[in-house]
Image 1 (cartoon, rainbow, N blue to C red):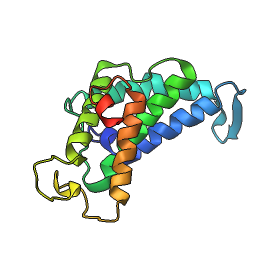
Image 2 (image 1 turned 120 degrees about the horizontal axis):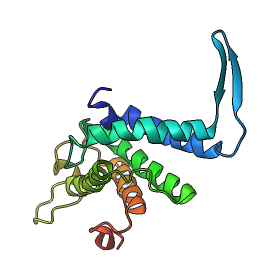
Image 3 (image 1 turned 45 degrees about the vertical axis):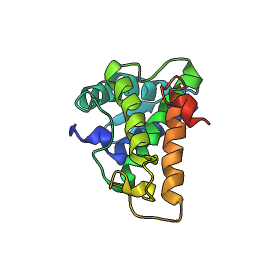
Length: 172
């Protein structure tokens, strides 16, 4: 896997989709498809096994190379990181298990919350700079759509990590 792949918005959407489908079909019987090469059986349990034994270890290995979190993609693509927080929260609330208990992934997600907060929140230095100018990576949009998407990422991060150091301040 390309080392940049887990930080790709495509991967983050894929991971959330896999978790949602696996949990939705977790208790259903296997579905068998007749293929040219023989029968193929799929189940929610197979998908959960695929996620926990293949996707998560690859993710952990690659995210360990990004100890300060964040996104290698510019502009709004990094906002898809909220899908990782939603996947963590969905899996944990459904199974009671932290899907991303691996230290590299946990550190990455916590540091990404810090990265997003520092990249988007006003710095209160007395200037009238728009919050999109702070990191220079966000498109210049005065309609508020970007702010809403950034807020959604921070809310998803705080749902996944209610003990986050900035949680009390951000929940006000």
